[in-house]
Image 1 (cartoon, one colour):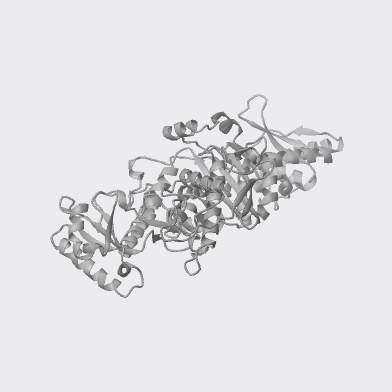
Image 2 (cartoon, rainbow, N blue to C red):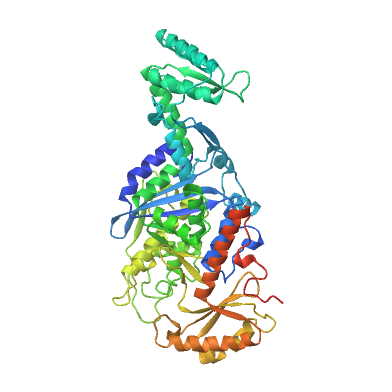
Length: 586
């Protein structure tokens, strides 16, 4: 279901109706860009805080959301899902309102659009005219609070104290006389049954006095600002005396206008309130865009961002993490892009069988038998634009990189993996819960873990190497240094270089004694540190444990924040400094 301003209220009602019955919700976004200048490019050696700091700068260009895809999956019987995809065009719009205190509530959003993203979106059929002219607006939580204070039901007939302003008294004789004259005019206006009356121009102080006295003596009256007929940039103040019917119509018009400013945030708030599992594919950037647009400015600390996300969406699953896990790798092919996974799933569904317990669709190499995976999807009435034959059954048909369609395919892939895990052999079964709140980080050795410490994508021993003499110790040179640990293929070494060019994460893995809790790990770490220390003695590198390096990143971030507070300018992050604090100063 494509959604814009013309049918948003209808779509919101359907979303609210079916959300409580959903088993999970799949989410996908299309954005105005996801890349920035060279210093924001992710490197394989970036720890999560560094990668987040770079991504935060990308969003600040500013880049925004174009479409939000939300697909409700309702499991009506075991393995069968009714699907309701919403493809919402979103476009933040400028507005200016006044709250009950008379304070201005204003928003003037800026839209950034990268040329590569524009070409990509156009190539995938985005209707730019519809996005700009009919996209549903949205605000963040802070602006929502201000707009709600401007709702007529909260401000009608408010006294000085109720409107948040202390009662003020004029002291100048001329102001006292002006007040008396104006109130006589207002009394006469009410007695005559007038409908509107223009107040004399005055300063803001006396305007507040007028508003308070009118509210006290005639609670049914309204004071409204309008652009002056002579100069639209100047605001005149009018007293309105509306009938009950007219007041209701007037209030309803204001209420609808304010709700239109809230826009997509209303759908987001319903999703948050439902606290259902939310499924994404490679969802790190999606979460950042959603948090920035709908919750507020992204915090500098990744830990604070994880708290924001975890509070809003307490149960998350990332199908990219599932697809690359040992328990599920190869079940839908060897490549884990959404397009590849969805295409392979469609083939499985068409054949009505799935190779559960085997590494891929070619068959089981270990002799396990083929089992039928009883799973199916139906697009509900009113949501069938992605049905291959128009009936809502069978293979999906749609355009990838349309947010609603991608959300639909993401949910289908998740449902497949969910069923595959449940059908695993007893004793080897991996619980779905082990994948909860684990978010894939592209090009990284880490996973983002909401509500927990971020972890490596595979278990191993990690050292951060800096000030590396790359003439001597490139990948081949480092491999030779580590031969006592890696010979005969006992263990493997992975090198994840950082953006500074002479620092990296070294990850030793592939053997039980490199895994956490193994009794031989301590010995293995000691051998590794001795090998690295020999190179450090020659001045070829400096080594630190992952924990030490993460502490250094946090300290640098705190220093940057303190500096920004004192002089208003951000210093470069740890990975952008040249040289870093642990690099040679010669």
